[in-house]
Image (cartoon, rainbow, N blue to C red):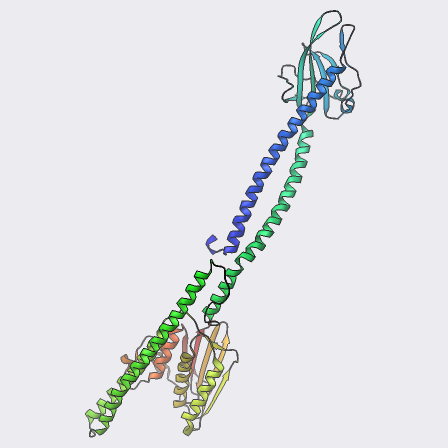
Length: 448
């Protein structure tokens, strides 16, 4: 599916994916660093509180005593999340902070407490971070006692801070991602605009609206546009040479055929002379047909486009002069924006041969209609003649039938018409005309 995506979308998706992966890595690293920093801060804070408790501890009547009210206000308030204990070697309570009164159990003295790192543990159902240290206290009476000083903080306090940090970081990372993606899209739009211009120019050439790719392009695109223009120029030059060669060939054949016709006129009237004259005429028609067919069938990289209206009216003027003696009413109804997707010469051959054929069979009226609909060009030629029997239409519309394969007496014009229609991937049909004669209807795709 990705092979159908445009270059802009590919670059945008890849760039966005890279940015998001990079920011996700930043998010993970930042979150991990913040958690580690938070734990380090908690450990340092709790260690300082341990030393503060030890500093206010006193020996009174051979007992270790600590003031009920602590200098740290959090130790004086319930639900502050910070608690402190002093336990003896047997785990019996010596002192506890007021903030620990809501807890029913005492800390587990079997855990390995330290001032250098946090120890995770449980107090009632709450997860705690602990810092502790065991000291040997010498009483006034000379006796020594071993005591464990513990300070703990609820882990949920750090979790809430981490969650707030994650929310803020995520928000800023998403905002930054969106801004960077927008900047990337604008940058891609600006960077790829020369490609869009080149694409539009190539499409115009393909549709026949331009002869070459024009414009100022970045140096990376210059070899491409130059190659395309060179190809188009080479094709046009080759086509001109091809047509010139065919014209020279036609001119060269015209003189021998004219001599043969002249010599036949000097021969006495006989059946042999008639047959020979027919064959010379047929050779003349075959040469004309094959020359026409070679030019029409030449492949085109560069599509042309021409307006139909002026060409059709040229044909109407010419036919009015040619068939002046018949007094025909030759009319044209052409949409002013209708265009033919090819050479004007091919259009003249197509419409001219159909219209000339209609004039030969018409009694008084011929109508040429042209319109563009649904990306197709429709050319209709009606006459008020005798019409064409159904059984003969299939023979006329037989595809791929060359003139030299036809029986004697069949015209050159319709064969050329069929070849032009085939070259432009069109279709032709023959029906009964509203004028009473035959209707030839041709449809040719106008889209590239």
